[in-house]
Image (tube, rainbow, N blue to C red; front, side, top):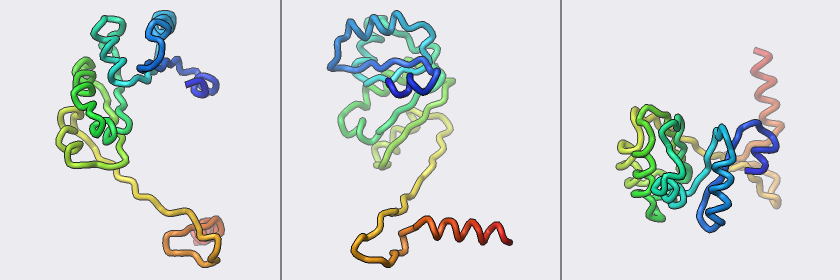
Length: 152
């Protein structure tokens, strides 16, 4: 969060368990115009329950590591948080994997969901072998292909 504040004008705050709750509440009450809240589900629900924070005006909800959140048993907490936010919002859900359980509940959390799948390319090379495997890409190949495309 410090890096974000250093290089951006986004007014942000991080709230999470394991840290002094009173200190976080002070930061929350003294930070006018917060644009970004990064929170763990448990601490956020605690603040909502104690009326320390309202999610009425949230326009974007980002659920990162959704597969891990489910594996760790946070489904009910994420659903409770989602229910506190106006349904007329944009929700972004990120997950390294997309297990069946996650597919089942996407419709509870998202409206008109769009799935974007990204494949990875192994960009590592074997230091002991000078030959490239079919998945290896080097800068010369990228430069050669972009040059040849420009020549056409």
